[in-house]
Length: 206
Image 1 (cartoon, rainbow, N blue to C red):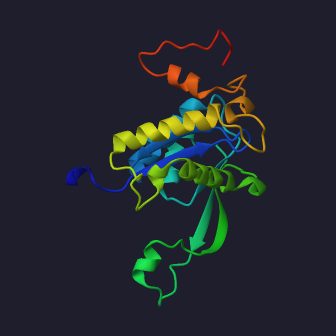
Image 2: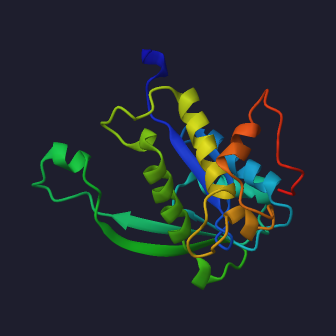
Image 3: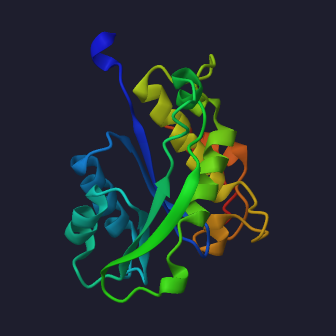
């Protein structure tokens, strides 16, 4: 339906040590979504995070302030991209990535360690997310057409990513690295978490 058409944004928060996805949100790219996302991040983190780094999206500053207060160590990595050559065909430019030009580290609150101001880990995770789900592949029959189904797919992906998939560098799952799980979960374990299905984990600690 026409009133349901439009853009949707996937917000993700990753712990750079354990590679755990702490929170995610599918929503608009606006102030309301930014605040809802950061407040959910704050709710899920027991202790005040040592440092937060985001990209240069303007909504993050107020959202982080609302969720964590001004005492948090918060920085942004602002990247600049070229708009493409003026002679580039408009249709080619639409589907071609912009060229990276520069990156600037910007301290917003607190005293963040400048050597740790980076978005590389979450950007790599975003690539993993796109590679695992064809719903993010434009111009294919796998691209999401309903927001509800898209959210289901994203939710399944992150349960799999956090609790089932072995991280190559860590050799364990992100959940195990974060101390949230003692073993690798299986696809069967995920199915057993579904509504109406009785969990069967053989009395083993998750």
